[in-house]
Amino acid sequence: MDDAVVPLLDRSEAWTHRERHQHHRFEIQVPEDTVEIRLRFGWEPRDLGSEHLGNGLSLSLFGPAGFRGSANRSVGDQDIRITESDAPPGFLVGPIPAGTWTLVLGAGEILNDGAETGELTYHLEATARIAGSGDPRRHRPPAAPAAAAPRPPADAPGWYRGDLHSHTVHSDGEITVPDRVRGAVERGQDFLAITDHNTVSHFRELDAWPDGITPIRGSEVTTFHGHLNCFGLRETIDWRDAARGSGAARIVEQAHDQRALISINHPSAFGDPWCGGCHWDFALVDYATIDAIEVWNGRWRMPESDNNGALAFWTDLLDAGFRPTAVSGTDSHSAEEDEYIALPMNHVYADDRGEGAILDGIRRGRVFLSSGPILTFRARGSDGVDVVLPGERLPADGTLDLTVDVENLEAPATLWFVTSGSRVALGECGAPSTRLVRDGLTATMWWRLELRAGSAPTAGVLSGDVLALTNPVFVTV
Image 1 (cartoon, helix red, strand yellow):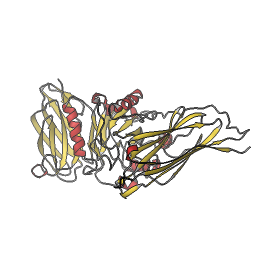
Image 2 (cartoon, one colour):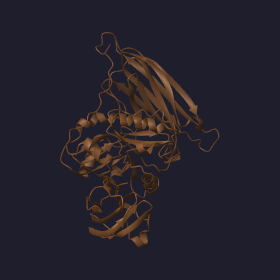
Image 3 (cartoon, one colour):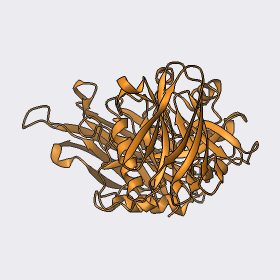
Image 4 (cartoon, helix red, strand yellow):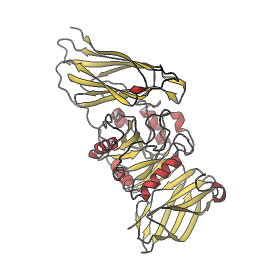
């Protein structure tokens, strides 16, 4: 007998701005012996005459065993087919167990087009294809998709360089995983985190990565009140109940249950309506549980990222006694964006190039960020002990003698010594390298190094673009 197609859902509706920032759930009953779920999904209007002003819906699917995929992309009408052995980017392959499945429409932005009657109209359809009698696919037991495993460690202790924020066709990117990885290898990266929105479907391509680059298993948890990167995941994070009040806590808990790191992305970025949820807006956050802050997103001078604001946010947390590690991310969505100059990279001092060692280096704050220049330092505290890595500690009096080497500099810049409540220009640095020595410096709570373009008299404290910065050395209390 031929396969039969059974309708499960056929829903069309007009929504206004009152339905925005909600996860709208639709349950479907999947019959026994289903071998394919097909989803048809679309909405209009998409944009309102500007690339930065548009409506946005995302479609996610959850089965009896949990997450099965997300379509986080603003494209035309989508036709999604999921089987045991095949699924489009964003979705997971695997058996199709009978029972209650849930479709979730995440209404990020619904704009009224300047009219009181403005609205968004969507259509959502679901069908199941059932195997015919005698088909060997019938009565197969359900199974959850296998969790991704990390690669074994590689290489020796040292500095490793890579990107912690990038996207592919598995969410809203325009580049495939192989092309993303190939470009990273060509740029000499040692590790790469692909952090597609609310999915881990890109994990199924990990086995095809070349040996010369370490994959960091990542996902960008994308909510209405903020975005968080998770690194070292085994499975997806459930973001659906992340209310503005204490919703971040549940996301952090899920990540830490997997021994994954969690990082707040672009906290000062433009938010609604330019980019729904991109600005960090969660309340009641326990920042002692936050592992990292993305202080540098894309090119430093991108106004939509407001990296100076993110740097100030992180600095305020340091002054309050918290110790999240500063990280960066290109946030690249295409091969064209990869070609931008001055994109930031994370330089992590780790015991080896394995994922676990890279993440441990980030946890310990052994990181500096750079668009090209290399910063190394040696700080001798009052106890006569040398400190050469960010994340380490100096005696409580905060006094130190400092030697800094700046390399790979293409134009003059100013090196700043930044501590709680103040900053001091240590001197100007010329291309291609400079050594600066300063004795008798004093730090309060913590200190870091910040390399900014231009000379001190003309650049001012914050006007020059950041070219490199270190994580803090802490003053022991």
